[in-house]
Image (cartoon, rainbow, N blue to C red):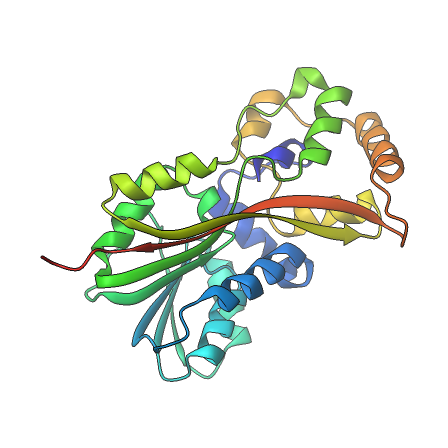
Length: 271
C-alpha cells in the first residue's frame, strides 16, 4: 500500500521488505486475515478443485485456509520473498503444500491449475496485465482466478493527514482502481464472472500501533519513499496526534479503512 511508503526507512524492493517482515507478519496482518476469510467464503462450493495455486502467499494465511477447505486438493503456493516461504513452511510442516519462491510475473510450472487464488498481494505486483497473462497460461480451460486486492482509496485517512502535514513529501504512487484490474484481466484473455468492492474497517489501539503494524507487514519503505523522502520525527508525532484525535472510535482506538476488490475471473473453455 503505497499510501504509507514514506513513514519508515526504505528497503530496496518488495521481496526484501516482505522477507524482512516475515517473522512478525501474521501477528500484525489484521486486514489480511479478514480479507482471506471473506475470500474463502466467496469461493465456489459445489466442486473441489484438484490443483490450486496461491499466488503471493506470504506466510500462508490463505494457503492454510485453502488446505482446510479442500483437503484432497494439491496446493502450490508462490511468493517472491524467501523468508515468507520459510515462515509459511514452519506454519504448515506436514508437507501438504508445495512452497515455491518465485515472482508472480515470471513463474513457470509444468502443469495447469483449476483454481488460482490470491489475497492482498496483487496490488504490489505490477504491471497487473503481466500477472494475469501468467495466470492464464497456468489455468485449465474453464479454470478460475479468485482474488482480493487493495484499491486506490485504501488508508485514505492516513494519506490525507500525511499530505496535509508534509505536502512536499506526497506519495508519488497509488494503488490500482477497479478499471485498472478489469482492463488488465480482460487484456490477458480472462472473462469476468463477478466482482465487488467493499470497504473494510479495522480498529487499532492508536495510530502508533497502527503504523507499527504496517511496518511489520513490510508495507512501508517502497519506491515512493526514495523519491519524496520520509517523515521526520516531528512530522510523525504530529501525524499520530492528529490521527488519534480525528479518527478515534467511541469504543476506543482508531479506525483505518481499506478499499478491497473481490473478483472472480474465468479462463474461457476451449472452443
